[in-house]
Image 1: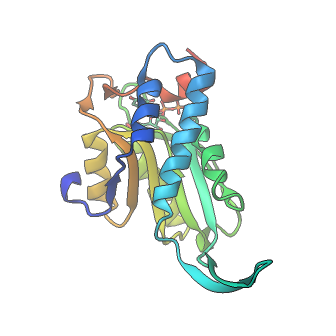
Image 2: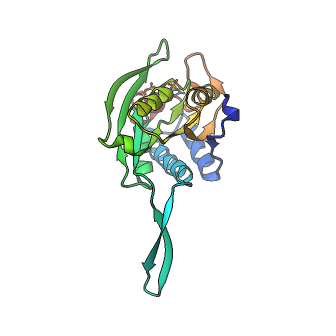
Image 3: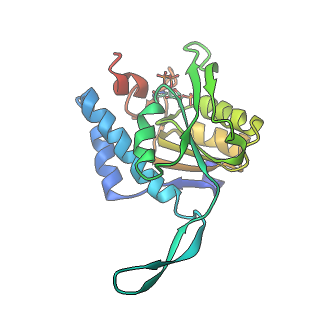
Length: 214
Ligand code: PRP
Ligand code: URA
């Protein structure tokens, strides 16, 4: 399946996200502002990605009467950032899902082969019972995301959602092909990859821009 036929792909279109993306993409944006905007976009994606979370009725006594309300009733959530750059999105998601637990997967792309290499993994003990949100600002070839999704499936996780800020068609195709069961939310779908596997026009190296390492 190609990404264009993937019913689980959601490309968010919203003026706030468009505005913040323009700041993020600008090569003149400094580390502090970049980090703040990554977290803000993560919050906005979370708002959309949680739209279908199950709720249950509850009656609440207000100072005036009884209100028939709804509260979240589904499984507990785990946020799983792909290190390093995924870390930049975690606080923005926790703003809306403060009781979520956080697991970490360390992956880097081999600069020659672009294949993902695992170097760290630490999950909450009850991870198999949680709904998992894997986060990484960039979905380029899709190798890192696909490997992270596979890890989580091997942990026994049943409901996995992927959140990215910018995705390339190659990465979207990879997820549609290898994990058609996974719901994906992206803030922008870009044109292509360059010869170094960077997203064009993209925003450069997300990890370096979040942590100021270049
Ligand atoms: C970046 C990015 C993704 C990966 C995307 O990480 O944060 O994890 O590349 O590329 P892919 O879709 O082709 O796998 P990177 O390897 O640069 O590591 P970093 O986060 O530590 O900078
Ligand atoms: N990783 C990044 O940080 N940026 C890209 O454009 C591709 C992979």
